[in-house]
Image (cartoon, rainbow, N blue to C red):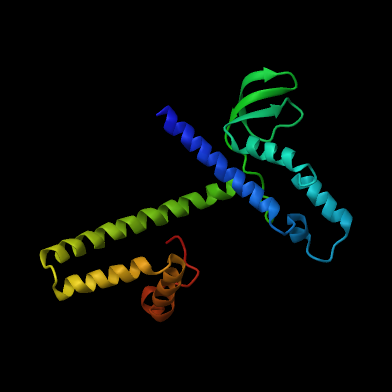
Length: 197
């Protein structure tokens, strides 16, 4: 169990590190993207300082890992980025147990954890309803297909399910939206943007 836990930690560290260095190697400047092409150097420098992009890459990486890990080193009172439980004071720093700090969105300036929290309930509702639909429709179709192998129903069910599995989900979503909101909109009362109901 300990060996598997260590493997999971190493894999997570590898993925997080790969993403960090990949986004720092790829061309493009987040500060420039926020301000647009026609801006002065002082504005870009201020945004870089606010995002911490003016620091050396090693320091950015250490802060990034500190923000994501459940154990972190945090400066004492003047500055705390996250709610934490102090485990051990270490001079000007303290070892803390905390939730990961996912920073702020470049565009909305909201905390990413708050944005994820707002999207979590609708996502769970969508996942639950799609699983419920799949069980209520899929099991009876599977039972009927198993009861009458090689019949026209079995072949049709196999063809439709193969087609459904091979379509990319983003394309299937557009097709389903078009069918139920545009073609059959007067019967379903749905629109293309959808709603929780």
